[in-house]
Amino acid sequence: MEKYIQVKNNEKIVIYQLNESEAAKELLTLLPLQKEVENFSNNEKIVYLPKALNTQNTPMAQHGIETLSYFEPWHNIVFYYDDFGPYPGLYQIGKLVKGQEYIKDFQGLVEISEYHE
Image 1 (spheres, rainbow, N blue to C red):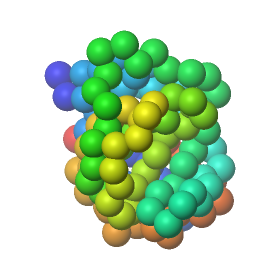
Image 2 (image 1 turned 180 degrees about the vertical axis):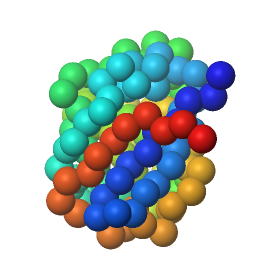
Image 3 (image 1 turned 90 degrees about the vertical axis):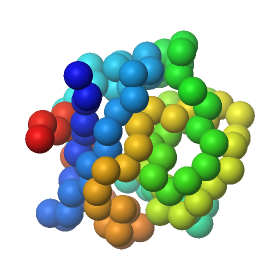
Image 4 (image 1 turned 30 degrees about the horizontal axis):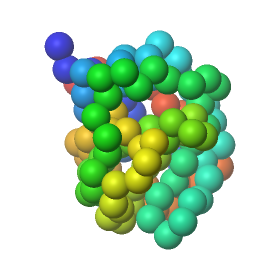
């Protein structure tokens, strides 16, 4: 069964479909979360998780603004609003379904929860 999460910020909602990786499954066990979103670089927003995720059988992230990623060294989720390239420790845990236009404007608290269609 397909699993989805929603990321809500200032009444704007972004939906991601999770893959079948261990990291994506563990992320679901941490939800719901309310976390401060931070700017990072010129193409992404990040949220730190309360604990590390298991990356066994989790594919490395390659590129594309539709990618939902987990950066293992810092235990954070990465929401892209511009393209990126492969990076050591960066794993793909899902893909964007809708709401990409809102990511660049994320600020303050975001609420991350499981989403059901």
